[in-house]
Image (cartoon, rainbow, N blue to C red; front, side, top):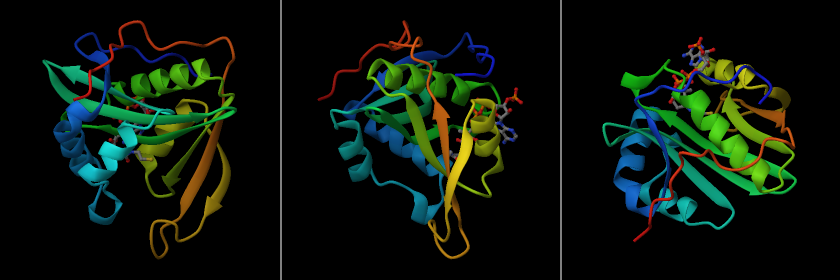
Length: 173
Ligand SMILES: CC(C)(COP(=O)(O)OP(=O)(O)OC[C@H]1O[C@@H](n2cnc3c(N)ncnc32)[C@H](O)[C@@H]1OP(=O)(O)O)[C@@H](O)C(=O)NCCC(=O)NCCS
């Protein structure tokens, strides 16, 4: 990341999440996205089980309050999801998840991270701008009529590798 590192909230534990966390991931999905943009439990199940993808979560008092899903097909990585529960927003939780996703992608040999974001999602756009993402292209009507997706890209720093030290893999059932 090129921006100043996020202040890590000291009450949140960074973990890897998997199929065993599906109910909490789906609950976060409902908090974060509206109807037609929501992923189903089946979608999340498929996504967290792919070999080239990793899902990170933040837990506060054991409860999952944020999650991010990233894929890596070197040289490209893609941030596929990032969500923080309403009650925990603006605490740099998403920035921390983005850092974890970036470190993981870099460790997989990715040299750039791509993502799509609605052009009216100003909070997410501010998060990504702060994280060093810049606009690459746009896809008109991608999310529906008049709902444009911006494609953003961030060049990854080769020296930043490895998953964060406090990430722990969650066993999947
Ligand atoms: C977008 C989202 C993940 C941000 O989560 P968050 O934990 O609140 O973000 P952070 O606290 O890490 O924000 C880091 C920085 O990003 C910017 N930012 C984040 N949300 C912002 C908002 N709503 N308005 C303005 N700036 C915002 C700020 O610069 C912030 O730093 P600051 O608080 O010191 O000013 C969260 O709002 C969310 O879950 N939204 C619904 C799901 C979604 O839209 N996901 C992205 C899809 S592409």
